[in-house]
Length: 110
Length: 115
Image (cartoon, each protein chain N blue to C red):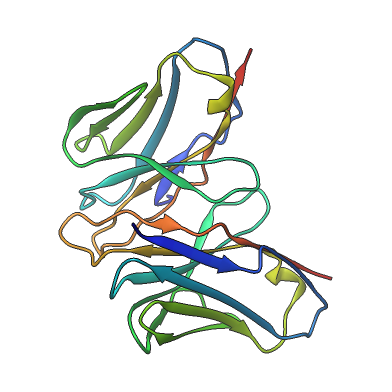
């Protein structure tokens, strides 16, 4: 089992729709979770983090965490073409290191 | 504010040649420093990390090495490049990790092509 699993996509949504990106992780001891966005040819940039079960909202982004199910997700409301990128899920393992998933490619169609 | 500089942005090197990539961080002291590699269409692979001057931990045994000669300087090296070393190399820093971890902040990356 991979440490972090994400659907590689591409996930295609129309402009204005909600994009839902999912991630599962294997380390039950993970306490913190980060979401990064990576545009093609660029380095990853941090967009959200979540520590507690439940939802955390930041503008058009909502992170959702369910530690019992070892599941974390990122919702993007009112998706824009500029949101087209690869989204990387990164739980922090018990050793304190971020473990990155392979990423989900999101394409927002005008 | 903190900034991270990484150079060069692109590099084309022949097989068997040496490599030196440099990364510096400004605006913070005693950061944790990391080198990652991202092969085409692949995820981020942690290569090395450092929690202090001269302290290097290797995650993946290979023909690469890392050094931290100063608090905010991190260098990735190779004596002889292989074709399989091609990829996107990313330097990153984080604050000292407390409970729960702290996020990584990435440099702009170096795209290395070994020919």
